Image 1 (cartoon, rainbow, N blue to C red):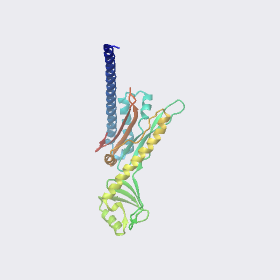
Image 2 (tube, helix red, strand yellow):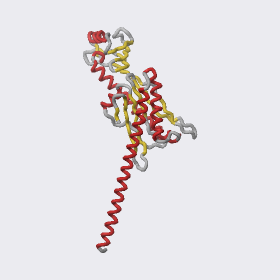
Image 3 (cartoon, rainbow, N blue to C red):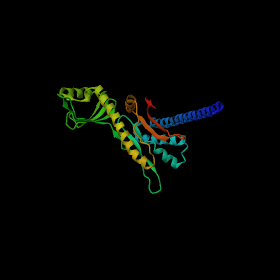
Length: 288
């Protein structure tokens, strides 16, 4: 083979490689743009939900939570142009394993349930019973007495104490670190050598936040597993899992009214990639 023939072959090979590389770059840019678009519409939906929560007071909390979730989905439907597409709306629900709406006392979990019958396909968004932040204080270090209190946290520095052992002289009592009666309660516990987080605000706050974050994390794991079974039955092969998160931001978000949602396994058009996003949003903290 002559030299000019080698040159021609080399030029053809080089041009082909350049075209393939350019095509690959274009595909990457397209995927990146689609990811950005999806993040924008997801953030918009979360903002719509949080705005709904802020519009109601605590007396309307259950109704406000339902309205927030409806606003979240309606925003996604509108952004994805599937508001008038029943199949599109049903399909989207398969990629949202769980939504949590929390306050200082507990939280609701919104999950998807398959209620299809015969040839009629329908996925319903369900709300769990409210999960309250309840702590059982049944252990004590050596040399201390256990109180056996059951505490339901109601705020940053308050809780309702169920005292079945009669340590405080009543079966149920409201405990507030800002209350005037607080010093008498702590004095009684310390005097009788009881170990309790009620005697130390730092211990109280640490236990409360640990409990809140731990309960929410466990609920997310549970409903991910439930969702996996339902999604697989509906043809989704993606394995849903609780996403990685910033622990401190997670704790801060749990400390008040917050909207938690994650979007997983959503196919990116024209690629083999998926869109995943986990967002926790309240008045003070936003993680995206």
